[in-house]
Amino acid sequence: MLRLENITSQYDDSVIVLRDISLKVMKGEMICILGSNGAGKTTLLRTITTLLKPLRGRIYFEDKRIDQLKTHQVIRLGISVVPEGRRLFPEFTVYENLRVGAFSEKDLSVIVKRMEELFGMFPVLRERQHQLAGTLSGGEQGMLTIARALMASPRMLLLDEPSLGLAPIMVRELFKVVKRINDGGVTILLIEQNANKSLSIASRGYVLQKGKIVAEGTKEELKQSDVLRLAYLKG
Image (cartoon, rainbow, N blue to C red; front, side, top):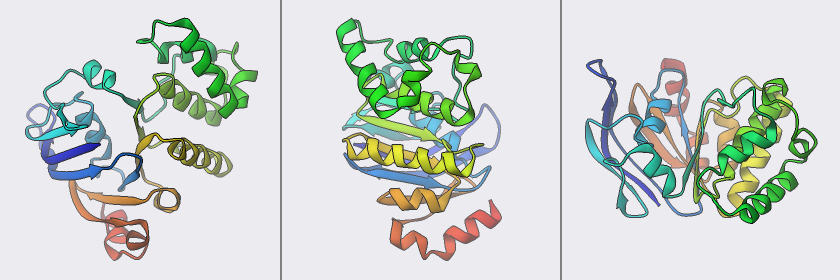
């Protein structure tokens, strides 16, 4: 479904952040990208969504080349993003934030149906639908960010550090939700520092260290990998 071929990226005239990245995500899979702070994980997501144009290489989504497209064109192909730091509209209500997630859908009945499905998945959001997003707890904001991304009915979901800043109990709940979304047929690329939790729900993974992929394999292989441990120690 998603394929990166020899991607190299940098910001302006700064040092190269990603070097010769190649990876693939098959339809229906959940893949995790693991690495410590500064490994290049967020830059990878920004490159996939063309917020940052790659210096070299190609990116394909469902066999269509997308690295030359604008970000809104990539999103319209069926990719939704859950950004690091959540980036909700704090002065909008929960309902209004969800409505923004369906910006490209004009049929109100479709929007209402999607929202009802998401309220079934996230009951707390139904209870809080008229509450300002900025007044929600960190865990509730995390759920709202995922729900907002799902309002676009994506075929693929990119999650950037969704567990960041959450209490352990909320991290467990969040990963259960992500697994349920994948089981429902949405392909997921999960970018995370939390290796144990990510490998508990993903089928395969890649380890990113200083802008390079230093290991890849099934979750069982990565759990036993010394390379994964060293990548976290060295950044």
